[in-house]
Length: 617
View: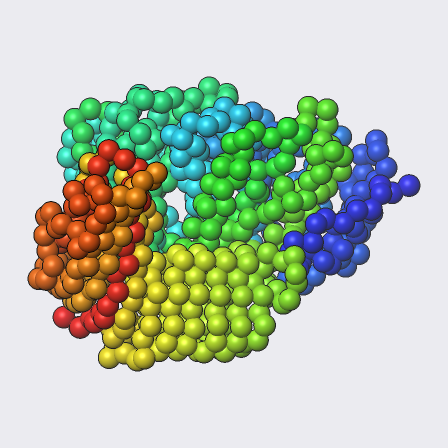
């Protein structure tokens, strides 16, 4: 008697092919050593034409991927997936492993190809959640290790650090890790590695390890993007990343996104006298380097009988990694493993490892993700129409659309020739609009919403990668060169320390302040309101601010409204003592608004609104 039928949660249109039910019917009764589906045809398994005709299947992960509790390897999720695809899987998952361990299992044995229909699955995080739990530095380390492994698997066109295409200055030696044929290492302060890559994002994979006090900086096309630690994002040596199986290091990813889709020159410089810098590989993403032969399905961290309070954080980091890499153009997609598992029936007594039914459900999640491919080995987006429980992009009307993979929860209301590159967005109508931020809305003609939470409308409006409400009736030459925009900035302070106001409430960067483009000019009406918690102390400022920028962030000039201690236009109570500063931000290339409060919790919000123009030079 065949195992009972069940249907996975219908979160993807591809899953509505009764794929899993047919596959489960092919599973033999318990105790049989027959390969499930061995006598079934692809048609009898319900495999549509858009299911990958994979030539190989390789799996990486921990004990769940390894099939720890499956009665036979054939009944593990990877065994079922290999059977359904008609290939013999190579399951290289290692029980007990974490994200930091994965480079040691992946780098020496797997090389993604630009052709050949390789399908790869990658799922880790259960052990990281247990071992790293609520430590924010370790959580960030998990994210960097996980993203390095995912990007490596999905990027055929990379340069290993020992490549002759990388120019080194200072003392560098070959690193012994990961087989000895990949990395380069240096202890010399000021040592550099220079290389050129192509794409809309740059990747640098480097060593993070316990007690490494080394720091390094990275510049792209002559602009320094940051300084980084050899151990997490916190103070060197302050936290241990030792894994469950005793690994004290890992390969982390530095990703620089939001670049033009072209050639970029990157310089990595060691900036500390102590510690070491070890590079593993570098690459560009997008454009001519888009992988056509490999597809990577990343499994979301599965459900457990008892889930820790930190598990949602780890899942969010996995989602963020996949979304960023998909936005860059890499062939990666996320499998909704938790959505398929029922902990009450699908796990063995330890409440962690899936039994045969749980393995079959994970197979269903992996197959649904792989089924989003429209040709062998490449993740392509299905268009999901009107499904009320669908994670996909809903297309009410529209034609000639380019919708990227993993655009969950987006909607296209009408028009044609739109491009949708990210999740939870809306294209209202019109033609030739682009949306690539999260939670953004765009409409009209040739408008661009490339930042998060933006509303961009008109003929050639643009948010320039930040968060804005932008409108344009037309352009001189390019989107955003004749428009008006409103940006809302905020900060919460608890003392009299001067604090920058940004659209995210976080540290100032290249997209979350009043950032001017090269050769741009802004005239802003800046209105600021601040209020203290628990009192009626408040202050308001109204300042006209004008700024212009030449070629580069250092050229910004604020020629109206600058001041270091601007008193409120109006105030109540102690609000009269609070101050606002307006200055040129020559690091990020824009207008810096800084508030100084008092020893109280004070919320400060800014609305900056005005016309913007950009010239060719």
